[in-house]
Amino acid sequence: CGCSSFVVLLPRSGIALLVGTALAIAGAAVAVAGVIAFRQALTTVDPLHPDRSASLVTQGVYRISRNPMYVGFIALLLGLAVALSSIPGGTVALAAALYLDRFQIRPEERILQRRFGAAFDRYRASVRRWL
Image 1 (cartoon, rainbow, N blue to C red):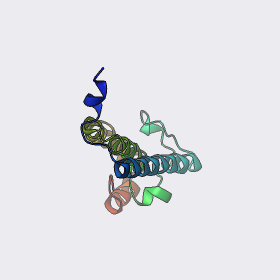
Image 2 (cartoon, rainbow, N blue to C red; image 1 turned 90 degrees about the horizontal axis):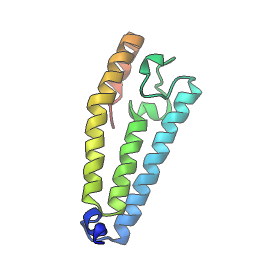
Image 3 (cartoon, one colour; image 1 turned 90 degrees about the vertical axis):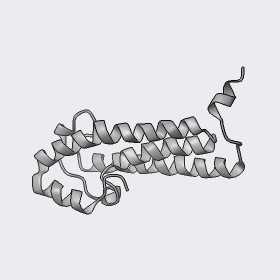
């Protein structure tokens, strides 16, 4: 069919498969750690309703990134792209990161700032949005 030439534009290698798989697994682990931290804090994990946040989570993976679930998701996508040696896959991961930053994270942060005020301002000043 010739379909594989569209998806894979670089030569596949064992190293790419190993590195990509490791990155994908690490990304999934970071995302799951973010979900667990939210569950432990008894707050919503629904990205469509940050206004329902019961608490500002700053522990665990949230000490490293304000958005570990999104970081993990993007790392998973990048890992798959690397494992498959796929330039289009890498492009999708980059586009997803840009979209999330503009249309999900920034609006969430505005809501969290209104909800948690100075506590969120201190957290935002001490922990990066991504990494």
